[in-house]
Structures are given as C-alpha cells and as structure tokens.
Image 1 (tube, rainbow, N blue to C red):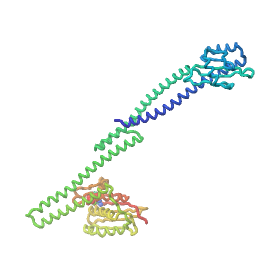
Image 2 (cartoon, rainbow, N blue to C red; image 1 turned 90 degrees about the vertical axis):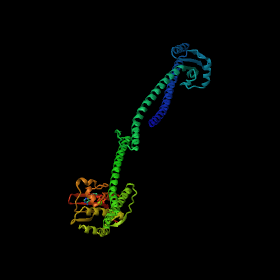
Image 3 (tube, helix red, strand yellow; image 1 turned 120 degrees about the vertical axis):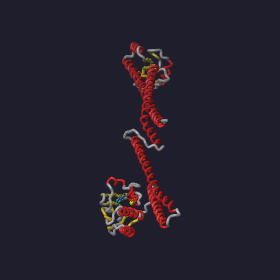
Image 4 (cartoon, rainbow, N blue to C red; image 1 turned 135 degrees about the vertical axis):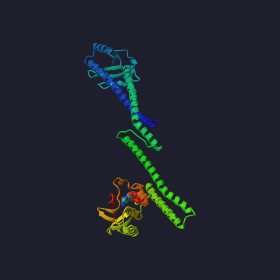
Length: 458
Ligand SMILES: Nc1ncnc2c1ncn2[C@@H]1O[C@H](COP(=O)(O)OP(=O)(O)OP(=O)(O)O)[C@@H](O)[C@H]1O
Ligand SMILES: [Mg+2]
C-alpha cells in the first residue's frame, strides 16, 4: 500500500549503505596499515637499539644480555655474522628462515630495513639492522615478531567494525522508517483526499501539514475542494434558475396555445393570445442566446475581435437606434463625448455592453427623468459613465447585481421582462477586454455605472 515509503526507504537505505561500506573499508584498511607500520617501526627501533649496544661493545656478554632481554618480551632477536651464520638467538627461529631472509638483503641501510611485512600469510614480521665494528660490517641484528599477535588484534578490530556496522544498519532502518512515515503519511492523506474529490465528495479536510512544499500541496488541495464545492453549488443554482426561467414562458405558451386552439373564441382574442405566445417565444430565444454567450465565456471560447474604435461615432450610432425607445417613455437621453477618443474593442460586443446598460437605465427609470452617457479621459484610461435618475439599487443588492439571474425585485423585474443575465454578460465582456466595471447607486435617486478601459493612442 505504502509504495512511496518503500521506495524512499529503499533509496535512502541503499545510498547510506554504500557510503557507509566505502567509509568503513577505508577506515578499516587505514587502521590496519598504521597498526602494522607501528609494529614494524618499533621492531626496527628495537633492532637499531641492539645494534648500537653491539657496536659499542661486541662481547659474548653483550650478546647474552640482548638474547636474555628478548626472551622476556614478545619479540625475538637473531644475530648473525656478516655471512649469515647465527651467533646468538633468543628463540629457535629456523635457520632456513634466516637463510631466506639474508638473501633478501644486499646492503641494508645502517638505519635498518623491513624484511617482512606480510602479516596475513607469514608467521613473522621481521626487520634487519646491520652493525659495524671499526667501520666494517660485522653482522646483522634480525628482529622478529609473531604475526599471530597482529592477526589477533586485527580480528578483534574486525569484530568491532562488524558490531558498529550492524548498529549503523539498525539505526538507519529505524531512521528511515520514521522518515518515510513523516514524509508519506501526509502524501497518503492527500491521495485519499483527491480520491474523495474525484468521487464528487467535496467535504475534504486535511490537517495543517506545515509550511514546506507538502504543506502547500495540502493547502492547494483544500482550496481546490472548496472551489469545486462552490462551483458545484453555483452550477446547481444556475441550472435551477435556467429551468425556472424557461418554465415560466413555457407555461404561458402552453396555456395560451391551448386557449387559441379552441373554436369558440373570437379572431381578436386569438390574435392577442398568439401575440403573447410570440412574445414569450421571443423571450425564450433571447434567454437562450444570452445563455449561449455566457457558456462561451465559461469555455473560454469567446473570441474578442479588437479594432480601433472611435467612441463618439459608436455612441452616435447607438443614440440613433435607442433614442426612439427613450422618447417613447419620455426619458431624456444625453451623450457627451469628445470626437478624438479611441479604444481597442470588439465593436459588436462593446455595443452590446452599452445597449444592455442603457436598456437597464431606461427600464428602471420613471418618465421625466434623465439618462446621461459621459466619456472622460483620465491618465491613460477612458472612463465611461452611464448615469440615470431611476429607482436605484438597494445597498444590500449592489454586490450581487453582476451575478447571473440576479434581479433586485423578482416580481418587479419580471413584469419588465428581464432575466437578470444582462449585467453578467456586460461584466464578462468588459473583463475580456481587460477593463473594469463598477457601480454606484442610491435608492430612488439613480444609478451610475462606470466602465474603465485603456485608451488607444496611436
Ligand atoms: N440602472 C439600474 N437602475 C436600477 N436597477 C438596476 C439598474 N441596472 C440594473 N439594475 C438591477 O440589477 C438587476 C440585474 O440587471 P441585469 O441587467 O443583469 O438584469 P435584467 O435587466 O433584470 O435582465 P436582462 O438585462 O437580462 O434583460 C436588475 O434586475 C435590476 O434589479
Ligand atoms: Mg438588463
């Protein structure tokens, strides 16, 4: 199950094991070498000592004295003449060995030399120091040390190394177990959390996992769960709104279609009903078009074809088309825009924005009031104000009016024919242009929308 902990553990184990083995190998070899070197040096020093004594007084007595000294220690001495004949010996060292060794020396330095250092295979470590009497080579002092002592020492050292190695491995395993647990437990928790998410269960709670990358990942997953939950709720609400919005006109259509089917109604009545059916169908088709636009925003497949636009020309064109509706409702419409203001925008989409905002201004205004469109250039930006003297929007509704299907007064707006998608589309379009839109309103006094968009200066 915990595959990652196995993997991490195995990798760490192998790497530490290799490092340890190499380290131990060098340490072990170093210790043995210096140990054997030490033995050889002290052996040679001892031999040199005897040589000095012999050079000072080469007498039978001195020989006896040296032999006696050596028979009491764990080293042995053999003294030969210049031809290799043994003249004194502290132990029964084979003559053959001496013969063998004497072949190795041609002219050993006065300071002595090592003859045998192979502690593994040979029985003795040995050194030789020549002694001179009257500046003439008079013989050799051979020193011996049994290698079994050294071997014993080294096997003890090996035992220690083995024990240390075993302890290291044990310690390593424990550390790795703890480490992999610390590392992998949060990972496993996150894996389970994401599994839960993919099953559609968004009630994920991860414990705080610290400030490192793991902690950040955990927080990321938590945030994702929250967002997904929000999206799910929003989608549900959205679907509920859509079906509600569609049901109402469809009920009308069905009802009036049923009545107009009857034979016993007058032509005039039938025409009225058919008219209502037509209007409701129109409403549905508008709604579907708006929804389609919004869906395109959600999919990011909405393409904005920007062009350099002369804002005052665009406003004039809009004025031509929309002013009859204002005149009809007896609402005054004014536009102020200098002729040299240019922006980069998709003409169709940008017109849609202004239409939606002016449509709202008219819809939510009383007769005799005034709606003004004003364009100002502030720094590098163009500010467009659409200001009416209508009913205004209550403070508590202001944050939501750009939401989909949001209407301040459901019954009131229903009568006016709105669906609550207009401002949602406006906001999406403005943001797709890289601009911002904000609103200020006071109840019964009027509302002012402000669009800020970058100026095209070329
Ligand atoms: N100028 C305004 N004056 C007063 N209230 C407004 C104004 N503009 C918008 N509102 C309020 O904000 C709500 C949302 O506006 P929006 O344009 O999104 O929807 P709608 O006008 O109701 O319907 P649609 O524009 O889709 O036909 C409106 O229902 C209205 O209550
Ligand atoms: Mg509207």
